[in-house]
Image 1: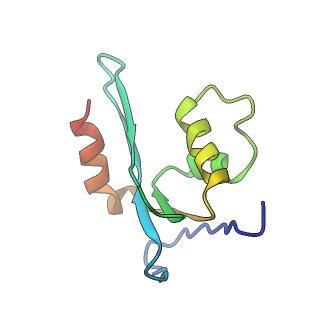
Image 2: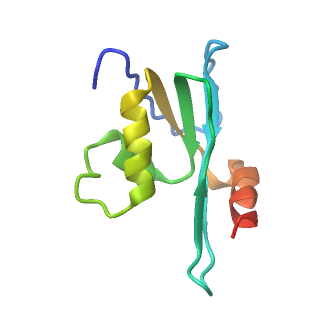
Length: 111
């Protein structure tokens, strides 16, 4: 971790995280169509160098915070990790599934 990176893992959905105005929140989710096997994972940010990533997947949080991706075949995780190395500051926050329903719905629309 270099001096510009910040790691945060908030497990309590009631916890409010207040960030300065120059941070962007990225809510992420993935979806799988069990019938066809089609998958989608998404999230978008542009023009920001301070990012808070919100996800409802604890395994993804662990993989992004640790160096578990070396042997991972999950290309989207490798790409996110590469972006995180480039960006100046980032935070990761766990969001329970019940609080991430809008993002879940949007991910499923793309299947």
